[in-house]
Length: 424
Ligand code: AMP
Ligand code: GLY
Image (cartoon, rainbow, N blue to C red; front, side, top):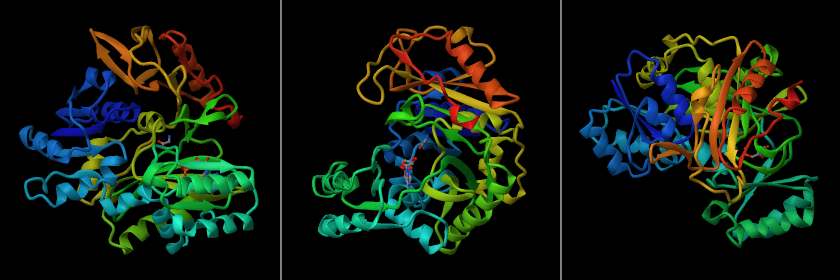
Protein backbone atom coordinates (compact mmCIF):
# COMPACT_ATOMS: atom_id res chain seq x y z
CA UNK A 1 0.00 0.00 0.00
CA UNK A 2 0.97 3.62 -0.46
CA UNK A 3 1.54 5.49 2.81
CA UNK A 4 1.97 9.19 3.49
CA UNK A 5 3.98 10.11 6.59
CA UNK A 6 3.72 13.70 7.81
CA UNK A 7 6.70 15.41 9.44
CA UNK A 8 10.38 16.14 8.93
CA UNK A 9 12.44 15.19 11.98
CA UNK A 10 14.43 12.32 13.39
CA UNK A 11 11.18 10.79 14.59
CA UNK A 12 9.87 10.69 11.03
CA UNK A 13 13.11 9.24 9.64
CA UNK A 14 12.89 6.47 12.26
CA UNK A 15 9.18 5.83 11.53
CA UNK A 16 9.91 5.77 7.79
CA UNK A 17 12.84 3.38 8.30
CA UNK A 18 10.61 1.07 10.33
CA UNK A 19 7.60 1.19 7.97
CA UNK A 20 9.83 0.43 4.98
CA UNK A 21 10.77 -2.90 6.60
CA UNK A 22 7.17 -3.95 6.16
CA UNK A 23 6.11 -6.05 3.20
CA UNK A 24 2.82 -4.14 3.23
CA UNK A 25 4.47 -0.82 2.37
CA UNK A 26 4.95 -0.57 -1.38
CA UNK A 27 5.47 3.18 -1.54
CA UNK A 28 6.21 5.74 1.14
CA UNK A 29 5.89 9.48 0.80
CA UNK A 30 7.19 11.78 3.52
CA UNK A 31 5.93 15.36 3.73
CA UNK A 32 8.09 17.36 3.89
CA UNK A 33 10.81 14.94 5.10
CA UNK A 34 14.55 15.59 5.29
CA UNK A 35 17.77 14.40 3.62
CA UNK A 36 17.52 11.09 5.50
CA UNK A 37 13.98 10.27 4.43
CA UNK A 38 14.93 11.30 0.87
CA UNK A 39 17.39 8.40 0.69
CA UNK A 40 14.79 5.77 1.62
CA UNK A 41 11.42 7.24 0.59
CA UNK A 42 10.00 10.01 -1.58
CA UNK A 43 9.89 13.46 -0.04
CA UNK A 44 6.96 15.65 -0.93
CA UNK A 45 6.96 19.42 -0.61
CA UNK A 46 3.76 19.66 1.38
CA UNK A 47 2.89 21.48 4.58
CA UNK A 48 1.32 18.92 6.99
CA UNK A 49 -1.01 21.64 8.28
CA UNK A 50 -2.36 22.51 4.85
CA UNK A 51 -5.16 19.94 4.91
CA UNK A 52 -6.64 20.73 1.48
CA UNK A 53 -3.16 20.21 -0.04
CA UNK A 54 -2.73 16.94 1.89
CA UNK A 55 -6.15 15.86 0.62
CA UNK A 56 -5.28 16.59 -3.00
CA UNK A 57 -2.01 14.70 -2.68
CA UNK A 58 -3.73 11.67 -1.17
CA UNK A 59 -6.33 11.57 -3.92
CA UNK A 60 -3.77 12.09 -6.70
CA UNK A 61 -1.45 9.35 -5.42
CA UNK A 62 -3.91 6.72 -4.11
CA UNK A 63 -2.59 7.06 -0.59
CA UNK A 64 -4.08 4.29 1.57
CA UNK A 65 -2.92 5.44 5.00
CA UNK A 66 -1.71 8.65 6.61
CA UNK A 67 0.69 8.47 9.56
CA UNK A 68 1.08 11.69 11.52
CA UNK A 69 4.46 12.36 13.15
CA UNK A 70 4.14 15.75 14.91
CA UNK A 71 1.39 17.06 17.16
CA UNK A 72 0.22 20.18 15.37
CA UNK A 73 -1.71 18.56 12.49
CA UNK A 74 -3.38 16.36 15.13
CA UNK A 75 -4.29 19.29 17.37
CA UNK A 76 -5.53 21.09 14.24
CA UNK A 77 -7.86 18.18 13.53
CA UNK A 78 -6.43 16.21 10.61
CA UNK A 79 -8.11 13.01 11.85
CA UNK A 80 -11.56 14.65 11.78
CA UNK A 81 -10.80 16.36 8.46
CA UNK A 82 -10.31 12.94 6.84
CA UNK A 83 -13.19 11.29 8.67
CA UNK A 84 -15.67 14.00 7.72
CA UNK A 85 -14.74 14.18 4.03
CA UNK A 86 -16.51 11.46 2.00
CA UNK A 87 -13.65 11.30 -0.51
CA UNK A 88 -11.13 10.69 2.29
CA UNK A 89 -13.11 8.74 4.87
CA UNK A 90 -11.72 5.39 3.68
CA UNK A 91 -8.12 6.51 4.30
CA UNK A 92 -7.16 5.80 7.91
CA UNK A 93 -5.23 8.47 9.77
CA UNK A 94 -2.94 7.12 12.48
CA UNK A 95 -3.41 9.59 15.31
CA UNK A 96 -6.13 10.79 17.66
CA UNK A 97 -9.20 12.84 16.83
CA UNK A 98 -9.07 16.58 17.48
CA UNK A 99 -10.73 15.97 20.83
CA UNK A 100 -8.17 13.31 21.78
CA UNK A 101 -5.33 15.57 20.67
CA UNK A 102 -6.40 18.03 23.35
CA UNK A 103 -4.55 15.78 25.78
CA UNK A 104 -1.45 17.48 24.38
CA UNK A 105 -3.04 20.66 23.01
CA UNK A 106 -4.28 21.85 26.38
CA UNK A 107 -2.52 21.21 29.68
CA UNK A 108 -5.74 22.05 31.53
CA UNK A 109 -7.73 19.55 29.46
CA UNK A 110 -5.12 16.89 30.24
CA UNK A 111 -5.17 17.68 33.97
CA UNK A 112 -8.97 17.54 34.08
CA UNK A 113 -8.91 14.20 32.25
CA UNK A 114 -6.33 12.84 34.72
CA UNK A 115 -8.38 13.96 37.70
CA UNK A 116 -11.65 12.60 36.24
CA UNK A 117 -10.05 9.20 35.85
CA UNK A 118 -8.20 9.16 39.14
CA UNK A 119 -4.79 8.93 37.49
CA UNK A 120 -1.89 10.02 39.70
CA UNK A 121 -0.58 13.49 38.77
CA UNK A 122 0.63 16.64 40.51
CA UNK A 123 -2.02 18.75 42.29
CA UNK A 124 -2.86 21.82 40.19
CA UNK A 125 -5.11 24.81 39.55
CA UNK A 126 -5.49 26.83 36.38
CA UNK A 127 -5.77 30.58 35.92
CA UNK A 128 -6.68 33.18 33.30
CA UNK A 129 -5.80 36.91 33.01
CA UNK A 130 -8.92 37.67 35.08
CA UNK A 131 -7.79 35.40 37.91
CA UNK A 132 -4.09 36.32 37.99
CA UNK A 133 -4.38 37.55 41.61
CA UNK A 134 -5.87 34.22 42.69
CA UNK A 135 -2.99 32.57 40.84
CA UNK A 136 -0.50 34.55 42.92
CA UNK A 137 -2.39 33.57 46.06
CA UNK A 138 -2.30 29.90 44.99
CA UNK A 139 1.47 30.16 44.51
CA UNK A 140 1.73 31.29 48.13
CA UNK A 141 0.11 28.05 49.29
CA UNK A 142 2.79 25.98 47.51
CA UNK A 143 6.43 25.44 48.40
CA UNK A 144 9.29 26.09 45.98
CA UNK A 145 10.06 25.24 43.24
CA UNK A 146 7.01 26.54 41.40
CA UNK A 147 5.81 24.95 38.16
CA UNK A 148 4.00 27.21 35.65
CA UNK A 149 2.67 25.70 32.44
CA UNK A 150 1.25 27.55 29.46
CA UNK A 151 -1.99 25.76 28.63
CA UNK A 152 -1.51 25.59 24.87
CA UNK A 153 1.19 24.34 22.49
CA UNK A 154 4.37 26.36 22.94
CA UNK A 155 6.92 24.28 21.01
CA UNK A 156 8.12 22.60 24.20
CA UNK A 157 9.03 25.92 25.81
CA UNK A 158 5.88 26.66 27.78
CA UNK A 159 6.90 25.21 31.16
CA UNK A 160 8.74 27.34 33.71
CA UNK A 161 10.17 25.97 36.94
CA UNK A 162 11.14 28.72 39.34
CA UNK A 163 12.71 28.60 42.76
CA UNK A 164 11.70 32.08 43.90
CA UNK A 165 8.12 32.98 44.82
CA UNK A 166 8.32 36.60 43.64
CA UNK A 167 9.84 35.52 40.33
CA UNK A 168 7.07 32.95 39.94
CA UNK A 169 4.43 35.66 40.46
CA UNK A 170 6.17 37.93 37.94
CA UNK A 171 6.35 35.13 35.37
CA UNK A 172 2.72 34.23 35.98
CA UNK A 173 1.81 37.83 35.08
CA UNK A 174 4.14 37.74 32.08
CA UNK A 175 2.44 34.61 30.82
CA UNK A 176 -1.16 35.60 31.49
CA UNK A 177 -1.17 39.36 31.05
CA UNK A 178 1.79 39.97 28.73
CA UNK A 179 1.29 36.88 26.53
CA UNK A 180 4.83 35.57 27.11
CA UNK A 181 3.95 32.47 25.05
CA UNK A 182 1.33 34.20 22.88
CA UNK A 183 -2.15 32.76 23.07
CA UNK A 184 -0.70 29.50 24.48
CA UNK A 185 -0.30 31.25 27.85
CA UNK A 186 -3.74 32.90 27.94
CA UNK A 187 -4.39 30.18 30.49
CA UNK A 188 -1.75 28.85 32.89
CA UNK A 189 -1.69 25.67 34.92
CA UNK A 190 0.17 25.97 38.23
CA UNK A 191 1.30 22.66 39.56
CA UNK A 192 2.82 21.18 42.65
CA UNK A 193 6.48 20.27 42.00
CA UNK A 194 7.20 16.55 41.93
CA UNK A 195 10.70 15.38 42.71
CA UNK A 196 11.94 12.22 41.04
CA UNK A 197 13.41 10.74 37.89
CA UNK A 198 11.56 11.02 34.57
CA UNK A 199 10.86 8.44 31.93
CA UNK A 200 8.42 7.99 29.09
CA UNK A 201 5.95 5.24 28.40
CA UNK A 202 4.63 4.82 24.86
CA UNK A 203 1.30 3.21 24.20
CA UNK A 204 -0.41 2.24 20.97
CA UNK A 205 -4.18 2.24 21.02
CA UNK A 206 -7.04 1.64 18.61
CA UNK A 207 -9.45 3.21 21.08
CA UNK A 208 -10.47 -0.16 22.49
CA UNK A 209 -7.33 -2.04 23.41
CA UNK A 210 -3.72 -1.04 23.83
CA UNK A 211 -0.14 -2.27 23.59
CA UNK A 212 2.73 -0.88 25.60
CA UNK A 213 5.88 -0.14 23.60
CA UNK A 214 9.36 -0.11 25.15
CA UNK A 215 10.03 2.63 27.69
CA UNK A 216 12.59 5.32 26.98
CA UNK A 217 14.29 8.13 28.82
CA UNK A 218 15.32 11.30 27.08
CA UNK A 219 17.78 14.01 28.08
CA UNK A 220 16.12 17.38 27.64
CA UNK A 221 18.77 19.86 28.77
CA UNK A 222 21.47 21.18 26.44
CA UNK A 223 24.28 20.85 28.97
CA UNK A 224 26.03 17.93 30.58
CA UNK A 225 24.72 16.89 33.97
CA UNK A 226 21.23 18.02 32.88
CA UNK A 227 22.07 21.72 33.02
CA UNK A 228 21.23 24.70 30.85
CA UNK A 229 18.29 25.34 28.57
CA UNK A 230 15.60 22.86 27.64
CA UNK A 231 15.81 21.36 24.16
CA UNK A 232 13.64 18.99 22.16
CA UNK A 233 15.84 16.18 23.52
CA UNK A 234 19.58 15.50 23.31
CA UNK A 235 19.59 11.72 23.50
CA UNK A 236 17.59 8.73 24.64
CA UNK A 237 17.98 5.30 26.16
CA UNK A 238 15.63 2.30 25.90
CA UNK A 239 14.74 0.35 27.95
CA UNK A 240 14.89 2.48 31.08
CA UNK A 241 16.90 0.41 33.58
CA UNK A 242 14.94 1.54 36.65
CA UNK A 243 11.54 0.83 35.06
CA UNK A 244 11.49 -2.77 36.28
CA UNK A 245 8.54 -5.17 36.06
CA UNK A 246 7.13 -4.13 39.42
CA UNK A 247 7.19 -0.44 38.48
CA UNK A 248 5.74 -1.09 35.02
CA UNK A 249 2.92 -3.07 36.59
CA UNK A 250 2.01 0.09 38.53
CA UNK A 251 2.28 2.17 35.35
CA UNK A 252 -0.06 -0.18 33.54
CA UNK A 253 -2.72 -0.53 36.25
CA UNK A 254 -2.67 3.02 37.60
CA UNK A 255 -2.03 4.97 34.40
CA UNK A 256 -2.28 3.12 31.08
CA UNK A 257 -5.48 1.18 31.75
CA UNK A 258 -7.45 4.13 33.16
CA UNK A 259 -6.20 6.36 30.33
CA UNK A 260 -7.46 4.04 27.61
CA UNK A 261 -10.65 3.25 29.54
CA UNK A 262 -11.18 6.99 30.04
CA UNK A 263 -10.91 7.69 26.31
CA UNK A 264 -13.42 4.96 25.64
CA UNK A 265 -15.88 6.04 28.34
CA UNK A 266 -15.79 9.59 27.02
CA UNK A 267 -16.19 8.45 23.40
CA UNK A 268 -12.97 10.10 22.38
CA UNK A 269 -11.76 8.54 19.12
CA UNK A 270 -8.12 7.67 19.37
CA UNK A 271 -6.16 5.51 16.95
CA UNK A 272 -2.53 6.23 17.48
CA UNK A 273 0.31 6.76 19.91
CA UNK A 274 -0.10 7.97 23.47
CA UNK A 275 3.16 9.25 24.91
CA UNK A 276 2.93 9.39 28.68
CA UNK A 277 5.59 11.51 30.37
CA UNK A 278 6.10 10.00 33.81
CA UNK A 279 8.00 10.85 36.93
CA UNK A 280 8.96 8.21 39.48
CA UNK A 281 8.43 9.63 42.94
CA UNK A 282 9.71 7.14 45.49
CA UNK A 283 8.53 3.96 43.81
CA UNK A 284 5.33 5.37 42.34
CA UNK A 285 4.61 6.71 38.86
CA UNK A 286 2.91 10.09 38.30
CA UNK A 287 1.89 11.61 34.99
CA UNK A 288 3.77 14.80 34.08
CA UNK A 289 2.16 15.17 30.67
CA UNK A 290 0.47 13.44 27.77
CA UNK A 291 1.63 13.80 24.20
CA UNK A 292 -0.44 12.44 21.35
CA UNK A 293 2.46 11.36 19.13
CA UNK A 294 5.78 9.63 19.52
CA UNK A 295 8.68 11.41 21.19
CA UNK A 296 11.73 12.71 19.41
CA UNK A 297 14.44 11.37 19.99
CA UNK A 298 12.64 8.53 21.83
CA UNK A 299 11.31 7.16 18.51
CA UNK A 300 14.90 6.71 17.40
CA UNK A 301 15.38 4.12 20.17
CA UNK A 302 11.86 2.68 20.45
CA UNK A 303 11.39 1.85 16.73
CA UNK A 304 14.75 0.05 16.44
CA UNK A 305 13.66 -2.21 19.33
CA UNK A 306 10.26 -3.02 17.83
CA UNK A 307 10.57 -6.26 15.88
CA UNK A 308 6.93 -6.49 14.82
CA UNK A 309 5.73 -5.10 11.50
CA UNK A 310 4.72 -1.49 12.11
CA UNK A 311 2.44 -1.22 9.08
CA UNK A 312 0.65 -4.37 10.19
CA UNK A 313 0.18 -2.75 13.61
CA UNK A 314 -1.15 0.47 12.07
CA UNK A 315 -3.59 -1.53 9.93
CA UNK A 316 -4.79 -3.35 13.03
CA UNK A 317 -5.24 0.00 14.78
CA UNK A 318 -7.26 1.35 11.86
CA UNK A 319 -9.59 -1.67 12.03
CA UNK A 320 -9.68 -1.72 15.83
CA UNK A 321 -8.05 -5.14 15.91
CA UNK A 322 -5.00 -4.25 17.93
CA UNK A 323 -5.93 -6.96 20.43
CA UNK A 324 -5.01 -9.53 17.75
CA UNK A 325 -1.42 -8.26 17.56
CA UNK A 326 1.44 -9.62 19.63
CA UNK A 327 4.36 -7.20 19.93
CA UNK A 328 7.87 -8.60 19.58
CA UNK A 329 10.57 -6.48 21.21
CA UNK A 330 14.33 -6.72 20.78
CA UNK A 331 15.80 -7.48 24.23
CA UNK A 332 18.92 -5.42 23.51
CA UNK A 333 19.31 -1.82 24.58
CA UNK A 334 19.15 0.98 22.08
CA UNK A 335 20.53 4.45 22.65
CA UNK A 336 20.63 7.56 20.55
CA UNK A 337 22.78 10.67 20.79
CA UNK A 338 21.60 13.89 19.16
CA UNK A 339 24.14 15.87 17.23
CA UNK A 340 23.06 19.51 17.15
CA UNK A 341 24.08 22.86 15.68
CA UNK A 342 26.28 25.00 17.94
CA UNK A 343 24.12 27.60 19.67
CA UNK A 344 20.96 25.46 19.75
CA UNK A 345 18.42 25.81 21.40
CA UNK A 346 19.11 29.52 20.89
CA UNK A 347 20.41 30.99 17.62
CA UNK A 348 22.36 28.70 15.35
CA UNK A 349 23.46 28.56 11.73
CA UNK A 350 22.14 26.27 9.03
CA UNK A 351 23.57 25.04 5.74
CA UNK A 352 26.71 23.40 7.21
CA UNK A 353 28.03 20.53 5.07
CA UNK A 354 27.90 17.21 6.95
CA UNK A 355 30.71 14.73 6.28
CA UNK A 356 31.45 11.20 7.42
CA UNK A 357 27.93 9.78 7.08
CA UNK A 358 29.11 7.01 4.73
CA UNK A 359 31.81 5.72 7.11
CA UNK A 360 29.47 5.09 10.04
CA UNK A 361 29.39 1.39 10.92
CA UNK A 362 27.32 -0.36 13.58
CA UNK A 363 25.08 2.65 14.20
CA UNK A 364 22.02 3.97 12.43
CA UNK A 365 22.10 7.66 11.64
CA UNK A 366 18.60 9.11 11.67
CA UNK A 367 18.44 12.56 10.14
CA UNK A 368 16.61 15.31 12.02
CA UNK A 369 17.35 18.78 10.65
CA UNK A 370 19.05 18.06 7.33
CA UNK A 371 18.44 18.85 3.70
CA UNK A 372 20.18 18.34 0.39
CA UNK A 373 21.88 21.32 -1.24
CA UNK A 374 23.90 20.95 -4.44
CA UNK A 375 24.00 17.16 -3.88
CA UNK A 376 25.47 17.55 -0.41
CA UNK A 377 23.80 16.81 2.92
CA UNK A 378 23.70 20.03 4.95
CA UNK A 379 22.30 20.98 8.34
CA UNK A 380 18.86 22.54 8.30
CA UNK A 381 17.83 22.76 11.95
CA UNK A 382 18.96 22.84 15.56
CA UNK A 383 18.88 19.10 16.05
CA UNK A 384 20.69 17.66 13.05
CA UNK A 385 21.37 13.91 13.42
CA UNK A 386 20.41 11.18 15.88
CA UNK A 387 23.03 8.43 16.07
CA UNK A 388 21.39 5.22 17.31
CA UNK A 389 23.16 2.01 18.37
CA UNK A 390 22.27 -1.32 19.89
CA UNK A 391 24.13 -3.01 22.72
CA UNK A 392 23.78 -5.86 25.17
CA UNK A 393 23.85 -3.06 27.76
CA UNK A 394 22.98 0.59 27.31
CA UNK A 395 26.61 1.46 28.15
CA UNK A 396 27.80 -0.63 25.20
CA UNK A 397 25.23 0.99 22.91
CA UNK A 398 26.21 4.49 24.04
CA UNK A 399 29.87 3.72 23.40
CA UNK A 400 29.11 2.68 19.82
CA UNK A 401 27.18 5.88 19.17
CA UNK A 402 30.06 8.01 20.44
CA UNK A 403 32.58 6.05 18.35
CA UNK A 404 30.51 6.79 15.26
CA UNK A 405 29.88 10.43 16.11
CA UNK A 406 33.66 10.83 16.10
CA UNK A 407 33.53 10.07 12.35
CA UNK A 408 30.97 12.80 11.66
CA UNK A 409 31.70 16.43 11.13
CA UNK A 410 30.06 19.76 10.45
CA UNK A 411 31.03 23.24 11.48
CA UNK A 412 30.07 23.99 15.11
CA UNK A 413 28.57 20.57 15.77
CA UNK A 414 27.79 19.80 19.41
CA UNK A 415 26.51 16.81 21.36
CA UNK A 416 26.26 15.84 25.00
CA UNK A 417 28.97 13.44 26.09
CA UNK A 418 27.14 12.14 29.14
CA UNK A 419 23.93 10.55 27.86
CA UNK A 420 22.91 7.86 30.37
CA UNK A 421 25.02 9.45 33.14
CA UNK A 422 22.24 9.24 35.72
CA UNK A 423 21.50 5.55 35.14
CA UNK A 424 24.68 4.04 36.58
P1 AMP B 1 5.94 19.19 30.28
O1 AMP B 1 6.01 20.03 29.03
O2 AMP B 1 4.65 19.22 30.98
O3 AMP B 1 6.50 17.82 30.05
O4 AMP B 1 7.04 19.82 31.25
C1 AMP B 1 8.38 19.99 30.84
C2 AMP B 1 9.32 19.49 31.90
O5 AMP B 1 9.10 20.21 33.11
C3 AMP B 1 9.11 18.04 32.29
O6 AMP B 1 9.79 17.18 31.44
C4 AMP B 1 9.64 18.01 33.68
O7 AMP B 1 11.05 17.93 33.68
C5 AMP B 1 9.27 19.35 34.22
N1 AMP B 1 8.02 19.28 34.99
C6 AMP B 1 6.77 19.47 34.51
N2 AMP B 1 5.85 19.34 35.48
C7 AMP B 1 6.53 19.09 36.61
C8 AMP B 1 6.13 18.86 37.97
N3 AMP B 1 4.87 18.91 38.36
N4 AMP B 1 7.10 18.60 38.86
C9 AMP B 1 8.40 18.57 38.49
N5 AMP B 1 8.82 18.78 37.24
C10 AMP B 1 7.91 19.04 36.30
N1 GLY C 1 11.55 14.26 23.51
C1 GLY C 1 10.38 14.83 24.03
C2 GLY C 1 9.30 15.03 23.07
O1 GLY C 1 9.31 14.52 21.97
O2 GLY C 1 8.37 15.73 23.41
